[in-house]
Figure 1 (cartoon, rainbow, N blue to C red):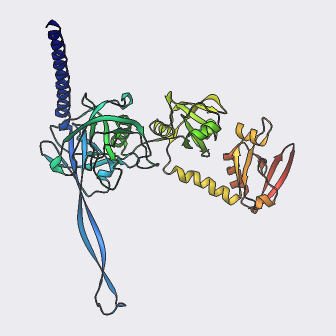
Figure 2 (tube, rainbow, N blue to C red):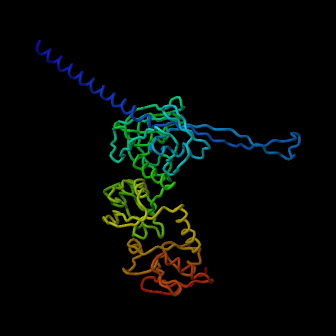
Figure 3 (tube, rainbow, N blue to C red):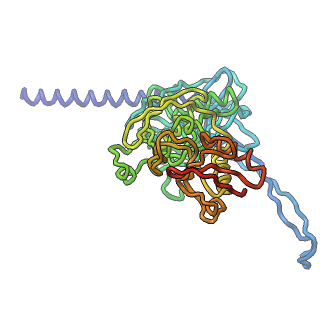
Length: 460
């Protein structure tokens, strides 16, 4: 009898403890929802669309002059947002919620409605800051997305489908971190993946931890088909990425990003094996833009960047995001692998040009007109063409066999050491001298091949 009594007591105690834990867990969810909900808003947007149509004045004569008339109609859409500054009325949301909209209305949890103005938008991160003039607002606490762990519980809050469902709260866990290439390769993406239900209308809403801190802005869903409803795979922009964009939009009206000047790709298994690497982490440099911060610092094609500013670089998206959020004009340490050996460089970043792809394209077009490409002398070029140490100039790396340069005798591996009467130190100097010396019909190059140097005249 005593044995059964002890067993019953243990089971009762376990049941009581389990009920207590469930009760505390439930209370934690409710407390967070109660605290955060007043900071979340519903965003209603309108846009007037003009549609031009044709009308025949005489239906029996197809050749009769036609007349245009305009038809206007309004489109209405829904999104969510989060109050981040109660004194100034700043609200965070997604760029795609407010982009190109004519009217933006914000509805609070107490049903007050306000007209909103756009402070700034950033399509590359899909973030925007809008502003309302209102009193008695509740701002949300900002968390730290760098310390998140897969498996943590989170709540998503927003207005799915329509405004009647505003401030809906869903629960789930963090399913994964660092997701990229979800929306576009050209965007800055480092998504938190969650199975908390996120549906159309939740865009711009809050993803919070159980401390009631904002850890992400809900941005996208993956449905696995043509339907638009949730399938347990939602994505949020991490708050540490949001903070940089948000502060720039408020203070500058635009996002100031840094630029390294490289084309990068991930290391897959085949590439890593071909390079005899033990790791698959890092960003592989496929090309270096001329006169970029990377080129000035000595970064070369084939280098694998494994660390930037003491942060581990696991892939190309990680490097892209870390560099873009860094400060232009500041010096940073870069750790990389070159020929299997670890190296450190210090690089001063520059502000991202308006169109870096165009910057790279200009050089390519120029080289295409010349019929050949040149590169600075570096360790890779020196090994490839068996060049002596200490040689100065630029090396012909590619040449079009149909070009005048090829007909004149120029070949890959040739080192151009002088243009006209001036010595060439690097690619930038080469182009500057070429501009000055090509005003006539011909340019004189001094070219070195092996131990022999000779002058070569090229018609421009």
